[in-house]
Image (cartoon, rainbow, N blue to C red; front, top):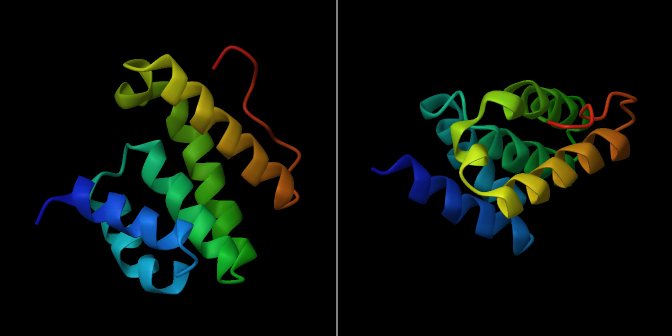
Length: 104
């Protein structure tokens, strides 16, 4: 099984409104790739959609922690900016006052 494909499929499920079905795959992908901030963003978004605000906030905070050293983000500036926005928005929407620092 390829974790990146599983995570991508789960992200599509989330975007299509079936976040509950995506959670197991997203948790698995986050475990398999513990240093990828993207997996934490997807997990946080799915958890928020299922009503788990505490879990969603924890996942977004983990994404923010991983983001500066995520090699995948360093490879693509537009991807980096898009996910930085999603992390900041998730933190803000979930009530955290800790957006990513400028320059990250």
